[in-house]
Length: 402
Ligand SMILES: Cc1ncc(COP(=O)(O)O)c(C=O)c1O
Image (cartoon, rainbow, N blue to C red; front, side, top):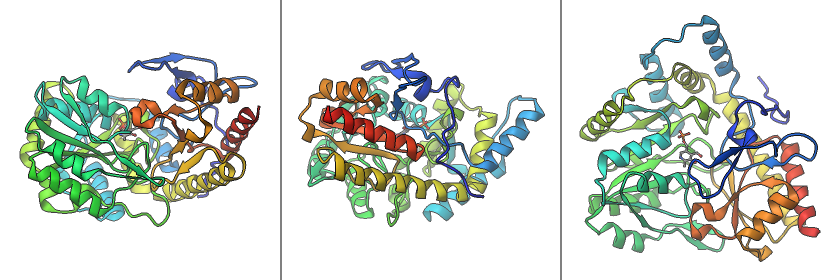
């Protein structure tokens, strides 16, 4: 079927983090109710990473039918659910996994926290690569571990890893884990097999466990190939844990269902022990059903979403070039989150927020939230109907002109 992503669906009053709440900076749980995004002159929220699109029709149908059944007792992950995950990894990513490697987690972010609890003792260290998704910082700090920062390098508009710095930092015997963001949120890189191999070898040499967050791994722009870190070699598979799910790919974040893929039996048993000790072996009835249906029948929808988001990216890139050359798009290879280099505007972070939120009524994530390396940048979510995207761009242009 043909989906109509141009159509705006009212999300107000659905307890949506994006449309009914607003971020209260500096607070991990700092969201506050707001009516900024309703009524005439409403603000446009383009920050938190969910799409303003309905999930694939087969998912909607299956959930509606299950809701009509009306009994929502305890459920388990069925064989057909696990098979759907295995098949998706094989057909979409050419990655052969076994059903028994798949450990449940109520989201990739909860999973990251549980992984730090399991594999990093208080006071030990975890490497992350800023500017990076802020919950990586929290997963480390909230679990009494120490952050080790291996900042990405930015050369001529393209981010790369600093392997010399990584090798030095990984050689600290206190470093036990490195969290890879692949594709990288917010800078949009999809790491190449060569980059992943260097990263993986440094970690292997130094006995550092790799946690590869691949939640955005299905959201790729044309011509970009995605290689799961663990698919590169048996040694990498045995020294890694991969976070996957439908939160981003199929817009199912509120259903809190994800999978940690753990080929190494010892690591898997240790992670499962943490799940048990936190009472987390159960699964969400709707989350399981939605992800299974999405993996089994959501490909057509995904193909259309990817074309739509890429057209949004093209429209945005052209708009900035023509009308706002001081804002530069850092070309993403994956994800619907676009990293905007706003340094040409010559504003500090307060000035940028004032311009975008107060004057333009466009709400983005400030780059500084991803680490000090992100200052002068903004992250914009373009998974929205094109008329909203264009309105946001026009508002920003008017605000700058004023
Ligand atoms: C890199 C990354 N990991 C994890 C998540 C959230 O995953 P989940 O909703 O499964 O916890 C996000 C959401 O934006 C993300 O960007």
